[in-house]
Amino acid sequence: MAQILDSLPPEQSGKILCCYVNATSKIQVARISNIPNWYFERVVFPGQRLAFEAPREAQLEIHTGMMASAILSDRIPCDRLAISEPSSDDLDTSSDYVDDPSNKKQIVQSISPKTGDTTKPLTIASLASVD
Image (cartoon, rainbow, N blue to C red; front, side, top):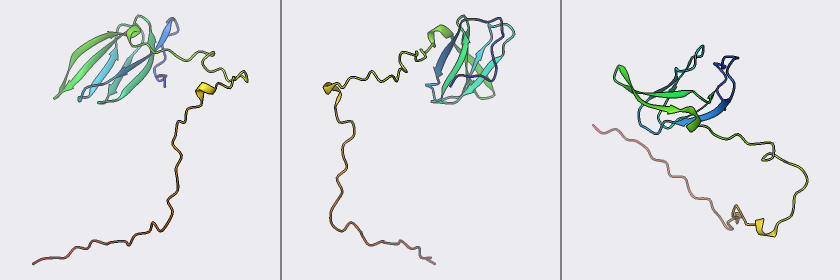
């Protein structure tokens, strides 16, 4: 999902959809500071994926959290983080479907039901006090 909380200034054109993943075990702060009249700063937790819209010339600064401080650990041009959005051709759901016999691979194995009694007695663990 694209970030829409802080919309770009109206004079900005050529925005791109970007994605950054925090592949570290530390909390990071992602910040764009080179675009005038626009504030973008987000906390990115370990393993979290951050999707956002930004001008093509924006640079994402990554500040890695330390005890009571943060260190600028990377500066990434947003055009390197760009992800492609599906075009209308990719989402075409017209009825021009061709039945392709090579596309009939079984994706999910069928589930065969078990026969016979599958019930088992319930064993309850109990605690006893020891003096």
